[in-house]
Length: 155
Image 1: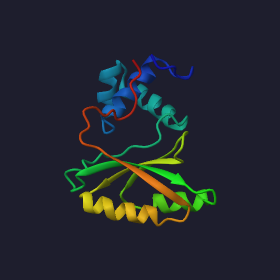
Image 2: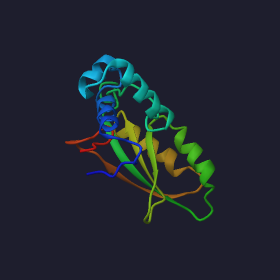
Image 3: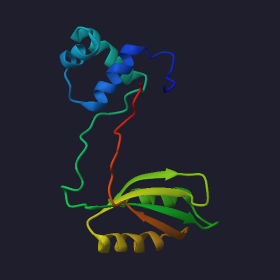
């Protein structure tokens, strides 16, 4: 069981789970899930938004259907003279980069990227390696994704 902040009750958690499954659900639909009337759901959702438990709403697109057939993780090993702010700006400006995580261990960052092909990935890696502050990279290509959770499960 996941530890949750004390200001969240069971209904809040059920609302958060329902919204993770369908961010476009109406207050009436959410009310059916948690057993509340739409105005009460509206009030709870607004409170969850105001407290920062809900950051945003958006569509999750299928990148494979958009032509990005290859997913990879690139470990970035930085040099001692790395300007981390500039480094992060360069990474975030690359449209193929989906996520950047600062990690413990030998590497400084772990990036999730999507590309159209191995040639596209090779071109992206050349851009990574040319970045000031990059010492080297290590790439892991994803063969398949048997499980991926969008969000977090509370139970």
